[in-house]
Image 1 (cartoon, helix red, strand yellow):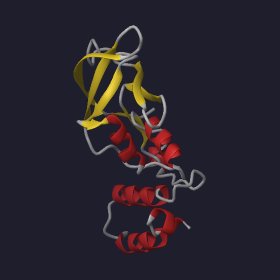
Image 2 (image 1 turned 180 degrees about the vertical axis):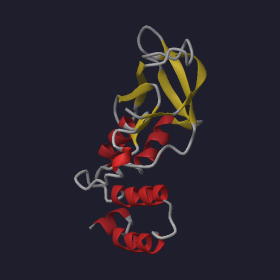
Image 3 (image 1 turned 90 degrees about the vertical axis):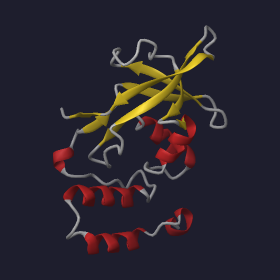
Image 4 (image 1 turned 90 degrees about the horizontal axis):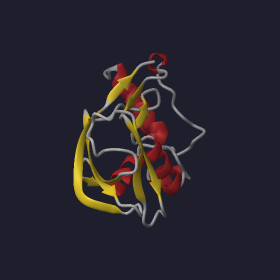
Length: 175
């Protein structure tokens, strides 16, 4: 089933990982094992990493939500926890780009790192983890910061004005 559906062989990947385990760092082993289990696309089979990473997250100080249909989605910033980022970057702005990639394409690419057996559930999980990623369940972000391309909205909620950008560093939160 999973091998044919996702063109992925978890048993073979685990065999390869076993052969590499002696030379991998703890972090590299954790990242590889999390990737193998995530690619099963099963919400009930989830890798939980080292206890030292429990509750540790990489976060961006804002939230994004998808609204509209999957055929024409719109990504909206719903909360900003650091007003020092940019005076125009606030709740309600529309996100058009993520690191120079159209936001919907960036979300679809990120969804490959998320659980979910259907494209809609993968996309929903990707949006949830776009700005907050538990390090116990997966790898930290590759980038040190993201460049968010956004537009303000008019009174009707439609994008208006010039495309603006803000550079936002990832932060590691250890409760």
